[in-house]
Length: 199
Image (cartoon, rainbow, N blue to C red; front, side):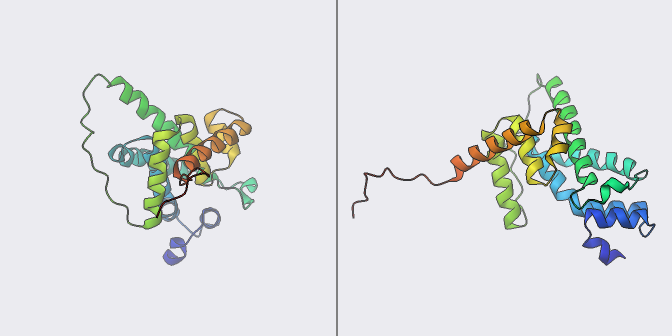
């Protein structure tokens, strides 16, 4: 069963757990393998890498506690339903809020983060995603960052709206705003029509 779990989808893990084919620990391990890079990327969007790695542990501890009591409901049978992904997104949101409050409370103390170097990513696509998220972090308002990270990860707009206490229309508006900002910054600038390069 270990090989099947390695290539699992959220739906297959939930079904296997509901049928008793996976223990709680095996199911949790499969979900961790599936979503750990994504959770870390969400957290890194709003927190420095070292903090994000610590916060990630908090998120997974919350899921582990809930996972032991998880119920697979009929409404989760839909192919679009990804209740674990949605739960992880909401949990990241709340963990980051708590972290921001604690950080603000310590704001008077000097922070020595200016010289921290970022570790290189293993895969080219992860590096490109990291660059885009770093750019989003610099040019997009926090409200757009939250929506962008969730939408790019496949969290349904309904779940994002619920987690952020807003309408789905507001979620779409913020997502489009973030994408427009990123496109403007990433697209090469065209030379004015009247100018030609001299050889």
